[in-house]
Image (tube, rainbow, N blue to C red; front, side):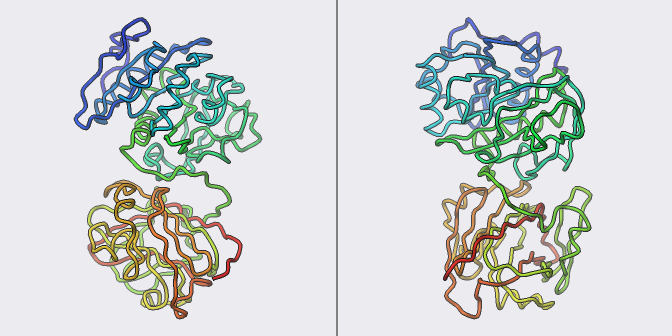
Length: 441
C-alpha cells in the first residue's frame, strides 16, 4: 500500500473546477463521485479519505471523481455515477434544485455512501435524513472502543472478526436507525466512555431506500482510519455494495435469536446424522466435509418461522438447507420427509441454488441477479408459514412454494445443513431464527 501522506498532497479537490472532474478509467464502467463540501466543521482527514477512496477504486475496479462543487448535483451529471460518497460533509451543502436532482438520482437506483460526518449534514432535508439513516447528536473524546459486527455476510463487514477493536471519534445519533435500516455493526458502550444511546448503538448500517442503495459508517474521523487495513476493507465493501458490484440483504432485521452464533457451545443443540462432518473454525464458520450427511438442530422443531443464515461456496460445491422433517439420526429421513433449499449454482433448474430441490426452481433471473459468486458470502431467508415456503437470497425473493403433500407437512419440523460429499466445501455462519405467529394452510 503506498503511503497516504505522499498521495494526499497530490489530490485535487475540485471546489472551483468545472464538472465533471477528471477521473480514472475502470474496465467495468463503474464510477463513484466523492463529495466533501463542508458548511460547518471541516475534518482534516478529508484529504486522507479522498486518497483512500482513489486507491480503493484502483484496486476495486471503479473510477473515482472528486469534487466540492455542489454544481455537480444535476440530473444529467449524476447519471454518470453508480454511487455518490458523502465524505465528512457538514451543514447545508446543496440548494433545493441540487437536492431535487439527488433525490431523483436515488429514486432511479443510485447509490449513497456516507462516511462519518455525512450524518452531520442537511438537518432540514428530510429525504437526506432518511437516506443517511440517522443524524449526528454528539461525541465524546477520540478513544478506543469495541465494535460488535452483527452482519458478517455483507461485503462491508464480511472480512471482520465478530469483535473489532479500533480508535475513532464515536458519534451518538439523534435516533436509532435499527427499525428502518439493517445494522451491520454496533458499538459496545461499556468499552468506552461517553456513549449516550442506552446500549443499542449502531455505528454502520445499510438500507434499500426509495429505489436506491444507502450505506453509512460512523468511522473515519481520524487520518489514521484511512491507513487502517480493516477500515479500508470496510469502506471498499460498502462502496462495492452501493455501486451494485456485490449483493447483500439490507432489510431491517429484528427479533431473531441465534441457533448457531459461531461458538462451540452453540453447537450443543445440533447433531450429526450420517457420514461426514462439519468443522468449526476460529472465525465462527462451519464448513462441510464428507457425506452424504446432515447436521440438524435437535433441540426443537419449528412450525412458523423466519430462518436466516449466511453461506459461501469455495467453487462448484453442493449443499442445502433442510426444513420440515421429523427428528431422526437417519440423514435420508430429511430427504424423504422434508424439503431442501439447494445450494449449487451449476445444477439443473429444479436442483440449483434457491430451488426447492426436485420440486420447484427458483426464479432464474432474480436468482442470478441476487447471487454473489463463489468465495463471497450470501444470505438466505427461508420463511415457513403454514404450508407456504418462501426463499429470499440476499434480500431478493427468489422462490415461493406451497406444499400439497401431507407426508411432507411444513407445519412442524426440524432444520438441518447438508454435507453433501467428499469434494464439497460449503461454509455457514450466523444461523438465526424468528418464530412467527401460527398460520393456516
